[in-house]
Length: 357
Image 1 (tube, rainbow, N blue to C red):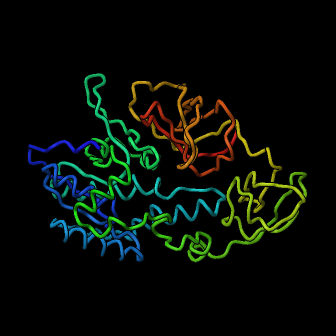
Image 2 (cartoon, rainbow, N blue to C red):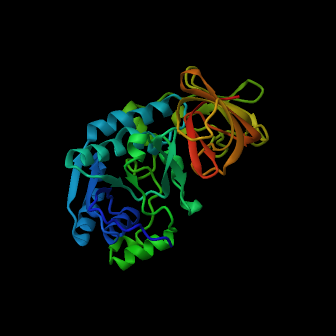
Image 3 (cartoon, helix red, strand yellow):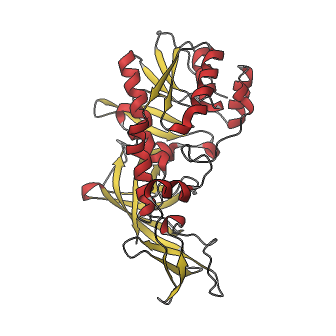
């Protein structure tokens, strides 16, 4: 276990606190390192009340001031509605990737600036490195030392304005070590199970949540590999590219969803063995100031948060687009998901999948 560096300059840090074990341990570590710590909890949607209460309990136990920021409208506009619209268009978004730059870190940094904090901190498993290039400081997002918990994929869209102020005290720690730290601090969250669902959909029923906001989407046709309609789907938001189970059709052989056409309301199926794509096109790419940066780069890429990293050639294209060609075909990269690019343990950039190529 690597200890937090001791703060000897009276620096103030604002911690994003949810009351979970990671953010709570983050507060405790920063206190032990000598920082002046306060916390902020984001009340972003009506069902967030338990999170606010847990943060209040932790703040009381650790004797720190807690700021509560309520931003339901911003979260609805920046995260929930775009998330629902992506599914309505047959894509598979990751709401955490969408939320982090537009909402979560935006409001954390806003509060930090208003109250004069030097740094912000979160309980993410990742790290930030400061380098000097062309006479100026630049900040690189890097993987956690504990790869099974690495969250750099979720943070890849953060800009220099955030990374230059961000402390990540859990960067060297395993989950078991973090739980031990929370136990040392006598925090009840030490044994709290990890959350597995999207924060604003606590029952994990995406279709019901989306249909409650957008209305029920119409049924449409499944199209068999031979181009013939072979059954009805329940509405495209119930499905994702690469899906095999729960299709409700029987062709006498394994098939999977190859693509979803929202315009025609059709879902195209393909035979088992055709799941793999040679590459993808990306849009809305972000690029970090890494020394390796070039128009064409051979990097490691992740096509979803839980995917293994795979080697690929990344070519930057005009207007924030990019082309990624995999050294070895990858299974079912889904439009709407992010492809994040790595050089070693450093994040170089990433973008949203437009289509397979």
